[in-house]
Amino acid sequence: MCETQLFVPNITKRTVGTLEVISFFKYSTLEDLLLTKHKPEGHRIYRELSKITVQPFIKKFAENYKKDVYIIGIDENVASGYSHVALLTQSMKREYVKPLHGALMARNKVKYSGKSLEFRLWYSRAFVYKGKNNIDAILVDDIITTGITLQEAYNVLTQSGVNVLFALTLADVEE
Image (tube, rainbow, N blue to C red; front, side, top):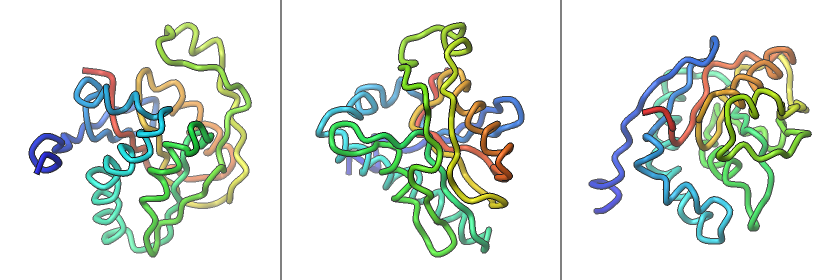
């Protein structure tokens, strides 16, 4: 009951460069839940969030798209026994929807949380893509703040021959 009454996604769209980013919630709505991502209970919370956000979205998308699309999570690093982004991407798996786990990883492990735009621009994530080329893909991350990370990921993927259709995030910090 709480799930259907309290956590009803309010989908928003934002364009970062030429990348369309679709978010399911405003960050302020889920902040306490999203901050559990590096705690043991985060696994359970992110799994439940995926059930009410990315799973229904991708199910509907796949019904209409009817050809292979790959899901590429941003920097699916394991912390606290799991990767919160990999949990989201894995939950999207369907007949024509295929997660590419660990395909896009950052060489620079700098933390952006709470950092300025200037800091984010100065310290690139230095992504490396080791996935398939010449594919259609959806980029996935948990939160969009400035969009710098998504834009950098998008650029690396397109340079590798990946056609990024759009990006999905659980939450958008922009109000």
